[in-house]
Length: 283
Ligand SMILES: NC(=O)c1ccc[n+]([C@@H]2O[C@H](COP(=O)([O-])OP(=O)(O)OC[C@H]3O[C@@H](n4cnc5c(N)ncnc54)[C@H](OP(=O)(O)O)[C@@H]3O)[C@@H](O)[C@H]2O)c1
Image (tube, rainbow, N blue to C red; front, side, top):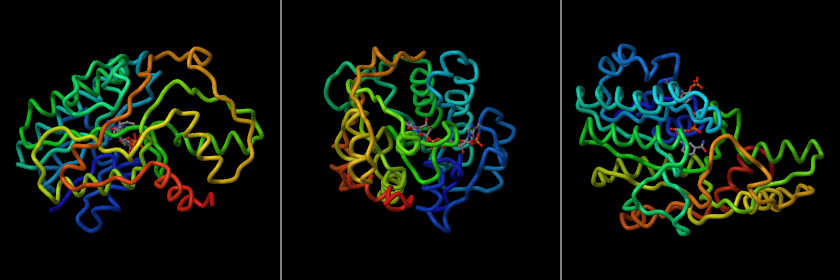
């Protein structure tokens, strides 16, 4: 199984490349641009069995002000990749997000819940999901959330864990929202789960791929400092004290029961966090 990874030097992309090892065909933004279907010709030349599209414009607040770019990368880009995947008979994997949900459910979302995004980024990713499905039946939509990975998100200049550690080292008082919950996810674990989905040839469709459990952003920050032993002045705040351009779902944890039902188990997010901190040299 030869696997083309689009966004190969991104946070999730680089772990996917590692997970697939010699079967990976890493493709960076320099090699192709998902918004330009002509540039995707390279995929036809390479002839992979699978194309994983991790490319995204995902600065959620910026997306509100740049809807054209957001839809071009996240939706039209998804359509372009799916079109080529169909042409060359490759399985298409589109990486999506917990932000397709509105956060009103109050318990973890399953794959059967109907998305109802509340910001431009979420709308564009949901459109990307629909276009992926519409263009080519041989597809997986894998929804991940709140990623932390060794490479750091190139689109966001790092990740939450690194931001917390940087602020703590700068001896800053840190305020973190305690009324928004999600499932923190180590990109390494997500990458291996996506590999298993492909290896096990699970039925095509949508899969939630996160570490097990959920927490608020404040609880996530608290765990980072507890594990590393960094002393810090950390305060829980409510999100109304931290206004942002884009609305964000209050509770976007994803249920991974479907994944588990196929024998793919994800470890609890705290265990994954410990491993990440070790690997990153913080422990
Ligand atoms: N980060 C999160 O917390 C999070 C949460 C939920 C879902 N997701 C989804 O997970 C996926 C991976 O996220 P990530 O954190 O790994 O992001 P990332 O580190 O920013 O990686 C995205 C990669 O895509 C490339 N890229 C961007 N625009 C492109 C284009 N037009 N054509 C080709 N390549 C392009 C980027 O390259 P350049 O940097 O060189 O442009 C980068 O290598 C995304 O689909 C995102 O929507 C992320």
